Amino acid sequence: MQLDVLYFAWLRERIGLPRERVETHAATVAGLVAELAAREDRYALAFADLASVRVALDQELAEFTAPLAGVREVAFFPPMTGG
Image (cartoon, rainbow, N blue to C red; front, side, top):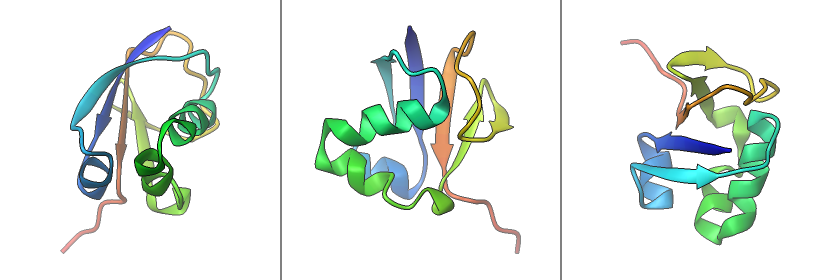
């Protein structure tokens, strides 16, 4: 399946892209992260500490165990803080 993958904040800086179209066979977000991290060191570095990463599927917050079936867009971003 093809997905639009968006990267925000320091994830964008580490990966060097704001977004990309990805072909994946992953069934879950965790599977997608594993595929991305295996691509290149820059992806592995960005996803090294998943406790510092949040994910949204089609603009809805989700868990890394969430299935990707029917999803069009995956966004990765750091946790949000209030001020």
